[in-house]
Length: 266
Image (cartoon, rainbow, N blue to C red; front, side):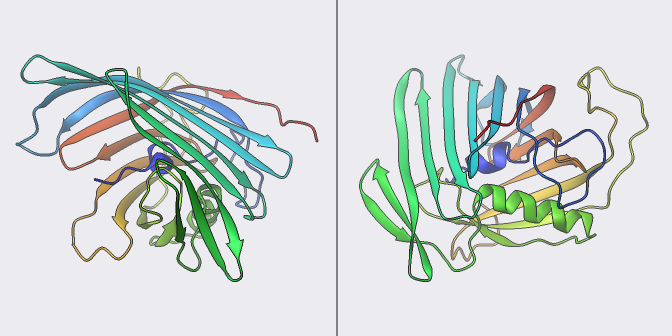
């Protein structure tokens, strides 16, 4: 099954006031608590999920870097516990001319996935040069977006009142190339202004858009997506909560705190 680093926590933190879609992204570090939302399938043997996720986004000369790190414990109905440690780092040029990526995943301390590579332009096409786990070259479909390109375009679409936003996205987290992402943007919701026990961060009472992503492999003909995720997306770009459904289990990520970072000088 395909998984996507980008969709676990993809949207950048901006300033706490409502921004125009053309405003610049704010470098930040965000921390999330991960819990089990429920079983997506009766056949699932997972009884509980606990963990954390950290995402760091930095503005550097001519581009952006993103780092994500998660520690997840999956409890099985036979009493066993699976510890999954997952990391993801990227560099994306402002003009889309270069995208570097590295993803690793460890299960119970054993490295089970290590993906590394970069993109390059070849005429009118963009090629992916995989360096790990094996050397390979793929050509991306025309019009494909990198993660931050997709972030900015989605925020613009939300501000303009669009509700459907289908795009092809390449994030470098799989060896299978790009994904087809069908996005539904709900109408902006206004919060009550009362912070709950789970919402103690400085952005807790901001209005948000309910967002749903359905993720498919390129050219997939089946009706069901590989997985889906729903998010509460603020007008400033923060996700306060997300739920990922991979077909067997649903996990929830809840924002605990956000640190705004300075931009690096050039």
